[in-house]
Length: 292
Image (cartoon, rainbow, N blue to C red; front, side):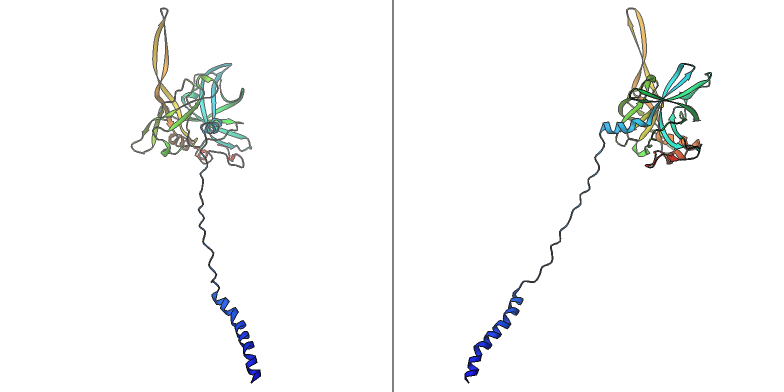
């Protein structure tokens, strides 16, 4: 009897000890799932280039032209590089678009077409060869082949970029001097009723004699919107000490040009559609192509 009663406390203690862990386990909180954290990725667009940065990108596409007879310059014009490739011998070749009337040399004896590139006081001189000419006035465009000239080709703008009020810069070489810039906007776009394509544009950017063949560029994209064909002028007369003087002043908004759509049409019709596929050199170098 004594052994039985003496064992009860020990038994209760054992039972209590055995049940304690299970009670603690039962009372322990269930593990909770890790909270879901939503990550919001904000993509920042590349900052738009400043006006100065865009102009720096535009300038290398432009050249100036001179038609020389003997030691005398007979006429001057401007041009834009629309193609850059290598010939069958591996030499570099640049293709320059200008106006057809600017490279008219039939009345000259032994004329030479010079293509000039200005480099901070230095002038690089090359000889150009007229490769294709359009019919004036409907297609007042010409293509000049320049061997040895390595310049990047311009990107041609899409028709959708031709909007009234588009900010533009005109790069040209008026009066045969170094490349100069003038700013303005597209003041008119004339559309063809049948093709629904632009056939003529105007800008209010001022230009001068020798700017024919110069490029009109979008300041937003840097692409070529049009090639300058000419401008209308107003004659101003005045008298000084009984002597009469007169000069022509370009009329604002009356600089007219061939849109990029017409440049594409010209290149395709003359067998130079390949230049549209290589309108800019690749990262690895100039586009490879065989002759004309």
